[in-house]
Length: 194
Image (cartoon, rainbow, N blue to C red; front, top):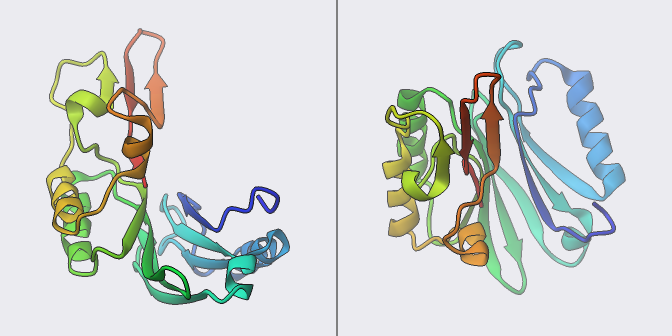
């Protein structure tokens, strides 16, 4: 990662509990060794899947950027930071792991909406897709469970945010998650966006 000169990295599903201080400290030290400052939102329960993090390169910080922790979700569903850079100004950076449960996911997006503005970078596993026809390929005929996608799309449109992966790759199918079983059932989706 150091050699690639990546300035901002978002992680989801870290599965680190907030009371596991030795693991949290280990992650912090590993980030420093790799040349990054770590911002983390651990899970609230030991058995909970989730947790998010953002890494900001120490090189970027040494060149005048200031990275400030703003907020982390109590269940670890997101971490949000403020990144101030002398060239591009202020950017609000999020790493998001949306709940698999549709109602919880929609509620998370509704609460997030008040804190997103046009200077926001949303990165994460949203557990829903913007366009079911474009972003899913699957064997099932039942409706795709996509609760919350309308709120996420509203946030994007209202704040004039762009899906950079879609901008770069165009409107052909591309998936970030795929699963299948021995019976031939499959589902490929693009639930991770930035």
